[in-house]
Image (cartoon, rainbow, N blue to C red; front, side):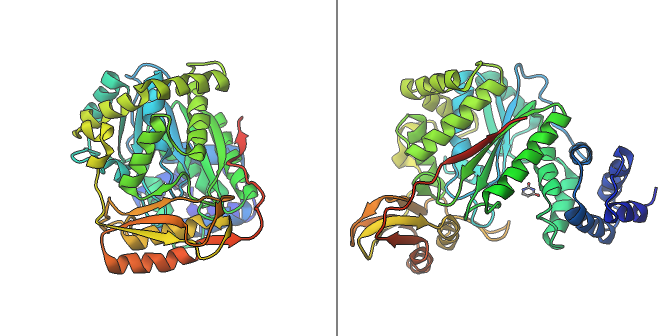
Length: 435
Ligand code: URA
């Protein structure tokens, strides 16, 4: 087989065989296929697309390109959850202990934040002493013992995807839907998932800017799931404005704990219940979403969901007292109120702008190596549709540096749009995509 023939076949709109796809993934992983040929192929895919079968083959080949996590020693159906990323998205912090409290084993690998999009692993480090690096055996044993562990991505999982994603980033081929879908799904499959719940974010603060794109991606991933025997459900949810009120690591942890206790913001609570209940269905614990919701609401009200998070924090080296006394989490020195300049209604809060402002403040990183400040961030007081009066606080800023605070304020200025008209309501959840 020759890579040049495979590139030409795709360039001319042909369908690659399973063997051809395996050949190119193997060759790219071991370095016998160079970047320039892989780039040409990725560009051909961008223009020509891939069939569902080709996409599934690519996913499995990439999942098998490195180490794969074997979760078969854990009882039950292992349901993984993935978000395509957004601003204020602390859903995993709530959903993981919540569904674990219901009896679904959660052995989850999460990422760090990059750019304006935050990461679960950074947020968890707000608990002093919390270990995100665990050996495989520690990780699995913890799930056996208490039902849940969330750790950083470790080991040599999906090296083909790592290389290809970096290449796509610099060859203007990130946008190819089959490549995005196979990239995400290969990582979930290598991480051992039996079933997958995808939270596909759509809007200004998301990778997918409009509903049509988000739906195309969601359908592509659900189709891969069907092809490779992993039940997959996608929830398409709003990321035009930040999720919940808190943006910033420790601030988001506090909001997540409040949400686990049933006192969270309406939008975050609704999303968590929607995602969590579908995970219970995928895990075979309940027969329908309504039953799942009821179970999860009970776990929130009884305090069992918060207790599960406390168990996880303790098992991973943190102090569970932090979960019950949130004032022990990292606190910023400077508290500044960002106020409305005029009366009116909040027409929009640009999630991307809020995300950028949080990076400026130190809550996020622009390069993988940048240190972050866990204490800083924003607490929004007004969300889309809320009425405001001039002088009223829109956002409380938690900062540790006056200069960074001023720069963040400049970014925030552009984030809020206040109008005299009540804006039309926008849904939190646009669509559920199932096989
Ligand atoms: N996220 C991924 O993991 N892969 C992509 O290709 C795009 C977003």
